[in-house]
Image 1 (cartoon, rainbow, N blue to C red):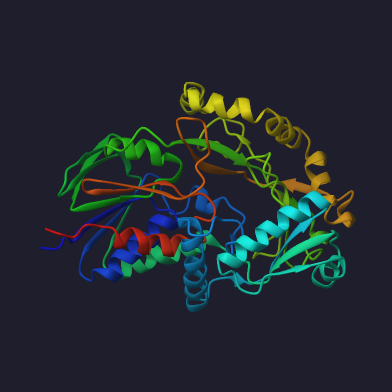
Image 2 (cartoon, rainbow, N blue to C red; image 1 turned 180 degrees about the horizontal axis):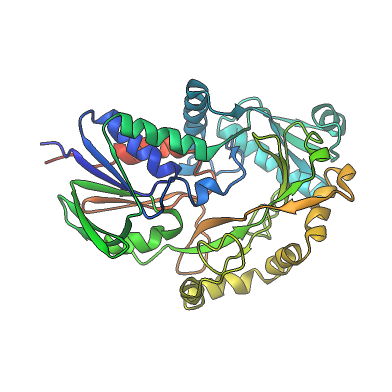
Length: 403
């Protein structure tokens, strides 16, 4: 007897994609999406730059590499079919010196192994042909890297769920899960009112709260989420057309995050950023409100202090960009010199749900835990949104439907 009563915790793009996949894979099944907010895509999905990643950086054979490449095709086709904004504006990863050139060559090899289409290494003249205002010694061109509105995609996916007979329950914070081999009982709280949902199987896509919800379901202690905020600035209107697409730096292995880059958005705005620094609160988007319980949880984790001790230099570098927006922009000027003196305005920061293991290592690949009647997404950082429809396929493929 097949299990036909499914719950999905989380109304971001991955939860929305999973819920839609369930309705398509099991017509007539009961599918319920639970989210503690009053509307969809309120967290990572609604606070990102909207880049559809082509799969340049990821280790060949990893879940990230496989699901990113599959996800690009799925999300492109979905957006075009639904008339959602989608633009293949292309991307350059630019090397400024000899050391970066060798790193870029390694990225090119990885991208080839991942099957990224149309990629090529180009020199200074090629850079100017693609981006007349950009400079560099060598660049990796990815013509099919695209931009999209992920929040719009998530809302559309949830519309599909409702049209297929699924139920969306907003304002329902999960407070407890009783997880057995053949069912899951999920307790939610809305104000002072409790409600219990009983499902044959639950898929947890809780993003910034994924480790806590996983623990409710009996999941492992690690990985734990350590939140890092990324601050973007919006360049003034006269700089909207300074680039045709995206310009990125070559990642430095000495630093845990990518570094400042220039990103075009589907609404026409041009962004510079982000920095990456520890967020004092998992949902502290304004930066003005400290989440004390979240901060104490990070401070009490020995793994975080191991990570911090290894990354003092990176923290100092990132802090300078947090304190001074001018220093923040200097990094972008190395790639686009005509940005010198540009005015910019900070926009609402995003917060990355970064998983960390007990030794203080950032977990790079996607992590899925399956226990009893629950499938738990424990780590789905970038390119999680790009890969969302492929992640949904992968998760539903792994659900045990034996009665």
